[in-house]
Amino acid sequence: MEQTLNQIFNLVTDPYTGIAAWKERLQKKVVGCMPMHLPEELVHAAGLQPVVLWRSNEPVTLGHAHVYTFNCGLTRSVVDDAVKGKLAVLDGIITYDLCLQARELPFIINRNAPPAYLETVYIPGPVTAPVYKDFLLENFRNLKASLEKFSGQTMTQDALRQSIALYNRQRGLLRQLYALRRQTPGLIRAKEMLAIVQSGMLMPKEEHIPLLENLIAELPKRTVSSGKKARVVLSGCMCQTPRFDLLDLIEEEGMAVIDDEIYVGGRYFFHDVAETGDPLEALAERYLNRTIPCPTKVDWTNHWGDYLVDWVGQQKAQGVVTLLVKFCPPHLCYYPDVKKRLANANIPEVMLEVEHEVVSLEQVRTRLQAFVEEIR
Image (cartoon, rainbow, N blue to C red):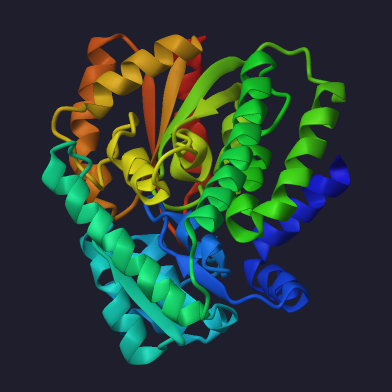
């Protein structure tokens, strides 16, 4: 098991080398996808290999000549990697209107470091009115045609169904891992869990699934510390992986992360795609009918704060640690309402602002120490 975890951490700490290695071995074109709402299954069914774009661990330098310094860490990091040539390992990139900052990306990348393939998709808010579904399906059809042209391979319905089944298999295994953590807090460290999820975004699903199966078989044999820890859940951090040093700090201060609803975590695999009927419609339905509210694609009838109150109760958590990415307008807009609803429900919450370059860990430690005293 430790060998599997080492393999996973090697990939997520240096995606460029890891992706280049399996790309050379598999001889497949690799397409980077903007996080959260793009259907990777379409890329996979076209005979290409999708990966989810990631935040580099390096400070942004050259990228600041092309993107505002008050953009979030992910958008600045992607631009920085592109102009430095570090994304040359990707044969293509697919973006979409995730947020105002993300809308700039295709223009900046196309002007300064154009890949062989660059596509933009338009995804509406998750409203169930028929016109929204029609619009989304039309965009998925356009993406399908674009991918077929780039790959030189026709995407059949059977191929798309097989890709959907493969991705559902991975989602199911990730849910099993999360269930193990809920049953035995501390069995899987927070950074291990998120690294496991992120590794599945950066390698072929066909190779990630055996790693998950190995972990599910071996983890129950792990010895867990008998010390009592406060049960907390993680919220926020919409598009990017939280800093591992922050996750370590949460655990060092006497808390056990029992669940999360961040993107590089529980949001990534929460919903399956239906494996019957028209596969394109199934992909659209997964997006339109999702039950986890997301501030980047607003459904005004679905309140994030109310969702969190119910979810925290289901997990029997003692508190919420909110990871708020600095310069993330969608999350910043929602946070006051979320905080108010948690407070009205008498649920303790602490917000940690996550910055790409610098975080004062000692200040964070002090806040976490005060928080854990409150919830014990």
